[in-house]
Amino acid sequence: MKFPYKLYRMNKGPGVPNGLMWRPRIPVIVIGPMGEVRLEALVDTGSDQTILPQVNTSEIGLKIDHQRQALVYGRLREHEELLNLGRNVRLGLQLDSKTYVWPATVWFSDSSDSPAILGRIGFLEYFDVTFYGKKLELEIKPTSDFPGVVSGLWE
Amino acid sequence: MAKVKTKVKKPFIVPLKYAGMWIAWSYDHSKIVASGKTLMEAKQKAHKAGEARPWLDRTPDPDAFFGGTSFRA
Image (tube, rainbow over all chains, first blue to last red; front, side):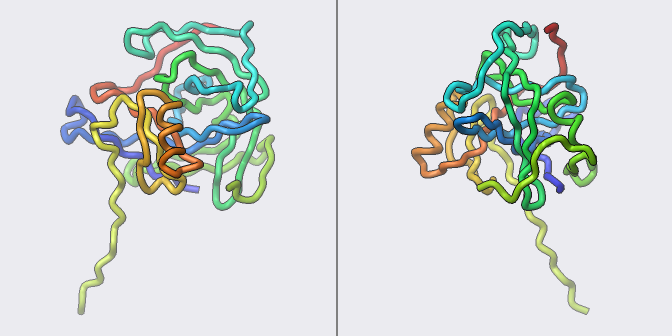
């Protein structure tokens, strides 16, 4: 399935003379035993890990492994960011009238300012992704050994 | 021969006023239904606006270019 890049207005800058920035962001569902959160997430081939913003994990029944934390410097303005490893996290993606759900290794930021990033671990290891620079869209297909569950469209 | 006009769907542009904020898209991604300084604020406003299943999106700051960094776990 193809997803068009999303278009954001920003201040004009180097490479952005018209103040318009295209970003390959796709809708992804963070699923816990008690609920879900729907996020727009950047597909980032340069990111080793999948990192999500601070969400109310207890509200959707997700657990956090507080023994596995990581400090990040420089991603957020004037902020030292702490990442917590999520447990029992599943992610969902709706492709071509089907919903793909898979267990994923995911880090949660301690800040809600953190962008949602889909990296290799937790996302790109399970999907073949092609970026079309001219068309400003990306195509996503599950790999042949996709480990998750495929069902009908999840309303 | 008459020219055939083809409609090209214009992309939705997230306005500058939302830069650096959380926005909530409608379920069909056709419009922004709410915004807030935090994810929770945008989510709650979207629910109040009648959107039960919003997609939440943290828009980058207006002068921020996204790049990578590293962390040690």
